Amino acid sequence: MVKYERGLDATFQALADPTRRAIVAALSRGQASVTELARPHRMSLPAVMKHLRVLQRAGLVTQRKRGRTRRCRLTARPLQKAEAWISQYRAFWETQLDALERYLAQTQTEESAWQRNSSPPKQR
Amino acid sequence: MVKYERGLDATFQALADPTRRAIVAALSRGQASVTELARPHRMSLPAVMKHLRVLQRAGLVTQRKRGRTRRCRLTARPLQKAEAWISQYRAFWETQLDALERYLAQTQTEESAWQRNSSPPKQR
Image 1: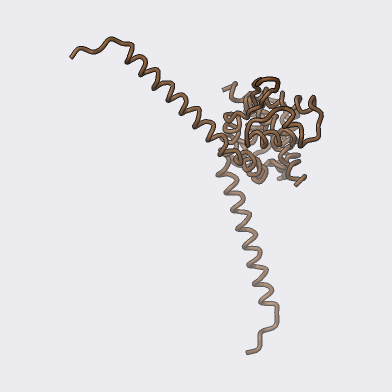
Image 2: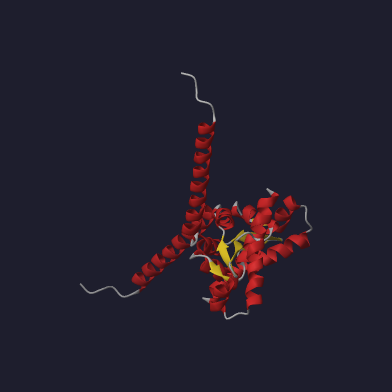
């Protein structure tokens, strides 16, 4: 249980940064070298490697040496666990957003009725 | 777009703590006062209020004064957005976890076959 909690701490912490989320997005399309990952962000290699270390500590990314380059790979499990935690509250947010939608629809209906009643009658 | 990114930063940051996740869980069952939220954690009120401020900054919790107490309320939208971001990668993790399952099943089949072949033939 504690391990799972720690895992969620590390996963959410890792995802709380736009560069790290972009790395996750890139790796979901396939493995990549550190240089390939750095390119779109115009960041120095050490800066990207710092982000990669956070992702690795969270178990979201693994690295494997292939020849002279290191290939990075996305790991599925932490993402799945984070999604499982959030989606426990799906019923809650669906209810709340439905209520908001109903409220807005009702307000609009009342406003239309008010406008109809306050406008001059149409000629027959 | 930037606002959304900032929103995700703040949401994931807020969820990267077990006490704050427990507060989210408690508020998903209904509104609560700060005192009610503090009770199960055996924390001081200022400590709980610090966590609540993080949740408020992320837009996950709103507070309203009712008489002499402040009622806290969970807000659906940031949770829904965080879930939407993670679930973009559902296809990725389902493929990876399926591949792992197939690999384990195949390894087990091969191991069983090896054990059958290496055990003495049954008497008829």
